[in-house]
Image (cartoon, rainbow, N blue to C red; front, side, top):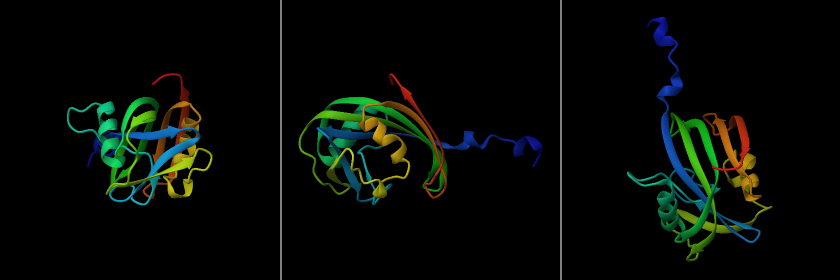
Amino acid sequence: MNSEQTNVDRSVMKKEITATLLFLLKDDQVLLAMKKRGFGVGRYNGVGGKPEPDESIEQTLVRETQEEIGVTPTEFDKVAVLTFDELFKGEPAIMRIHVYTATKWEGTPIETEEMKPKWFSKDQLPYDTMWPSDLIWLPRIVKGEKLNANIELDENDKMVSHNVTVVQKL
């Protein structure tokens, strides 16, 4: 192996993943859902997922919310872009999550094969059963801030570093 090969920037080889995440907000409550299968099983989170081919982020947000908790968001606001440098299913990846909140929707949240929704007080979120990095950004978006965040995780989903910036518009 020559010196050019050993100095290759490995970040160019990382898989890029785009996904959505939505939190329903009602009065002083946030809807979280317990993931029952697949990626994130056993953790509370918002609802969301990856786009289908030719699907916009907003279309993905609506479809995933319908599939995962049986409601259709009708008014939603983009509140954060989270960029995770991590291992996804054992492979180095950059995961870019477009985070939204919604205050209006059609339907009532229901349990599905994938998610079990539950309302929590904004000041009593179950961080011990959520992703470890949620603590650095979720309380801020619940309070109304808009954020850009870069978060580096190790192979055990522990934060190595993070940088969170408040922005006016996304």
